[in-house]
Amino acid sequence: MKSKKTNRQGSRGLFSVNKLTISILFIAIIFGFSIFKFTHHTNNKPNVLFIIVDDLRPELGCYGKTHVKTPNIDKLASKGLLFTHAYSQASSCFPARQALILGRRPEPQYFTRFYKEYCPKCISLPLHLKKNGYHTVSIGKVFHIQDENFWSEKELIPQSTYAPEYHTEKNLSYQTMLSEALDYSVTNDLWWTRKNRWFPASLWEAPELDDLSFFDGRTVAKAIEYLSKFKEQKTPFFLAIGFYKPHLPFVAPKKYFDLYPLSDISLTGLTKFPKNSPRYTVDARFEWQNYEKITTEDLLANPMKQKEFLRGYYACVSFIDAQVGKLIDSLEKLGLSENTIVIFIGDQGYHLSENEIFGKHTNFEAALKVPAIISYPDKIQAGQRTNSIIELIDIYPTLCEFLKLPIPRNVQGQSFKNILQDPLYEGKDFAVGVYPRGNFAGKTIRVPGFRYTRWENIHNGKTIEELYEYGKEEIEIENVALDPKYKNIKEKLSSKLKSN
Image (tube, rainbow, N blue to C red; front, side, top):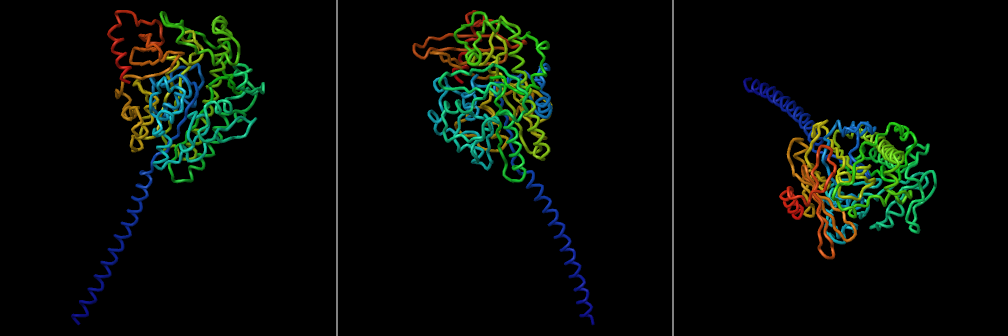
């Protein structure tokens, strides 16, 4: 009897233990599954939405220029960090974008040459991301010249409605890219041709067409299709979107021109060409003179023409702003925004009468300073701005740091991750730019308060120097390179430029 009692108690004890064990195991499984789900979610690599805009200067609402209507870019800035002193490495599309994609400074002797000719082992940003598990896609005018190995899919360049989409061929030459991909005079139905090498079209047009009739409108439509696809996949993506406007010609739907009555446009930005500055080092007019045969002198003497020029540029900026809005709205509606780093930049700046110049292709502030905004929910404090200097070549290593990826040896840029985490953090204090002119290789360095530029003749070594001290407006007023008062700062900046 005793033995039975003991067995009965043992059975009940065993049953109780089993019940307890099962309960603990059940809780552990549920808890473990929750941890797994949470870990799986938080360990996802962030996506990257990279937006590059052609010839965009920091004349936007979020930069305090409220006369230009950019509500969507302003909204993006309110969600991220805005850089007041971001600089391109060249005031020309091809070298500026190639420098960015490689994280490497352009050299005058290789200014318009494909990087594989002089740096065959260089690893580009999209290729590096692709090798590290990212699905990389390029839509629009992104990096000008590429290798198809950069991308997980062939590069997409949607055209206006007059032509279907097409894919660029492997290692497409710069000249072929230009002849096939440059924009189009919508109302005149005229092409750019190799034969006459100029655009028999107006500098600006305002056709009554919808956004999808244009290259950039179709670029966004295709980008939204891809975002929908990305929502269904687990692989992180790097989606690069390139907008062609506000590059010449200034062609956009009429509704964007209507935002800027000529009577409302101010010409207060006009400043004189810098005193004692060598004029032959500047020729920013050739691009727009390919459209309309008007001299700079004629333009400067005609206030109404100047207003039309500015209106065309502003209208194209507002057109691009609308496309950016569609893109960011789709990112949010698809539930992708929380885990996506958004990078918004211009490839180079643009003179709109500063230094009596209309155009780019200079080593001045207006041509090299660009807008830059980066957002990443919960990782980058929203609505902040920083005065720290960054260069576009710094984006590559910064992304690598954020994504916990190694930085390739070919990268010369410096990560500004610390600035993203603390806008008051003081990073490097300089930016370098390059633009050659004829036989002269021009290199420039920007530091707080000053810009120093050195021109060196590639044949005889003759040098010409420029030194500008900036005031609040940050415009070149007088070249003081020969002023003894500035000898020390000139020598210091000359040395710094040589070492960078």
